[in-house]
Structure formats: C-alpha cells, structure tokens
Image (cartoon, rainbow over all chains, first blue to last red; front, side, top):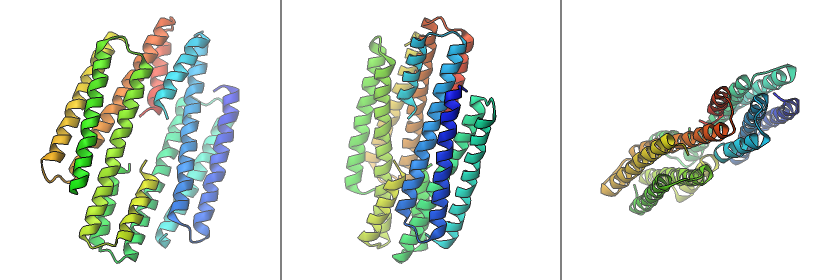
Length: 86
Length: 86
Length: 86
Length: 86
C-alpha cells in the first residue's frame, strides 16, 4: 500500500471506529429511535464502502506503477472502476 | 427498541468496533496486502448490514406489537423483509 | 398483490424489458464505449431495485390490511423499510 | 469491447430480457405470491450485476492490452476488482 494511502485508510478507519463506539453508547444509553440508529449505521456503511474503493484504487495505482504502466492507463482504470463500484 | 435487541445490537457494535480497530492497527503496522485488508473490510460491511436487519426486524416487532398485531402478521412481515434486505 | 400494484409492476417490468433490449442492440450494433453500456446497466439495476421495493411495500400493505392493522401501522412499517432498503 | 465479450454480453442481456418478460407475464397472468416474484427479480438483479463485472473486466483487459501491459498485471487487476465488486 502506498504510504499516503496507508495514512488515509488509517484515518478513515479511526473515524469509523469512533462512529461505531458512539452509536453503541447511544443505543446503550437510553430510548433511541430506530430511525436515528439506522441513519448512523447507514453512514458507517457508506464510510466502509469508501474505504474499499480507496483500497482498490491504491492497489491499481501501485500494481500498475510497478509494471511501468502509463499514468494515462492508471487514470482510465480508476475511472472505469468508479463507474461500477459505488 | 426491545431490551433484548438493545443488548444484541450493542454487542454487535462493540464487535465491529474491535474489528475496525484491529484493521487500523494492521494497516498502520506494516506492509499489508490489499487482499487481506479488503477481506476484513468486507466482513465489517456484512456485520453492519446484519445490524441494520436486526434493527428493522426489531422495529417491526415492536411497532406491530404496540398495535396489537397478531404474531402471525409479524412473522410474515419479517419473512417478507428477509427476501429483499440482504 | 393489490390490483393497482400489479399494473404498476407490469408497467415497470415492461419498461425494463425494453431498456434491456435496447442495450443488447446497442452492444450488438457497433463499437460501444464501456462507459455508455455501464450507464445503461446501472440504470436497469436501479429500476429492478425499485420494483423490489414496490413489491415489499405492497406485501406489507396487503398482509397488514388482511390482519386489520391500522393505517398508521402500515405507514410506519413502510417508512421503516424505506430507511434500510435503498 | 472485445468481440468475444460483445457476444457474451449480448447473450446475457437477451437472457435477462426473456427473464423480465416472463416475470411480467407471471404478474399479469394471475394471483402471484410476493415470494415468487421477488425470487425472480433478485435473480435478474444478480444477472445484471454479473454483466457489469464482465464489462469492467473487458475494459481492463482491452485498455491495459492497448497500453502493452503484461498479462500478469491484467490478471492481478482482475483479481483485485473481484475482491470488491460482488
């Protein structure tokens, strides 16, 4: 994993960790509405999804770079992935 | 939220929290393979999805119960939801 | 299935059918860009998802109605489902 | 799009088209159970998802091939995509 990606992924995971801990406290603490909890878990869901995309793009950049692929190729691959992975 | 669900959801969230912390340490700690990290984030993804389903089923049980709905109705609603929410 | 839903679902399915046929012709007919095809398949994907939601809501309305559930209950169940099924 | 992929994608789309038409007839024709319809729409859903993956892999193969990328690189990119796109 590229160093810059590593820092970004760790930062994102720490943020998810704090978010999950917050939701656990919220549920534990009292009478929470279904709506409020699901709003939080949906947000966590989306954050994990984004981490997966960051990881895949990093892999493509690093692996294609190791192979001496052109910047143009890497850019086009990343764009193609973005069309399908959401 | 029903008390038994609350305990279950908190337990699941604590487990996700530990899982996310573990992945952050793994990424921070050294040279991790893309494959290994994505395997973990996919597992976290699935765990969050299951929490959402638990929350929805609890809502249906509690809300329909408050309305005096039959057990039969609640059971059928839960089964119908399971067909679509995966 | 309620009669009004049946008509709606058939209309949606016919529309998807025409859409899929159009994409097949587009791919068959010439040199199509990846981007253009994926844009179409993503749209078809979303249309099928909406049909699933229509079906689930119809089931909830009909099944809860058969059970003599209040309109209020049905409305709350539908809203709860909308939070999770996207 | 590579010629072999084009034929594969058209074949898959024709199959989806027939499937959708069949479900429309089924819904139109009589008293269908929610469960049976959702089982069909879920299968159509999965089939479209597979078409998207076929398209993305074809794009990667063709685009990386145009760039003179090694077979090894293409293979690794395809495997990485398979980890995230499901």
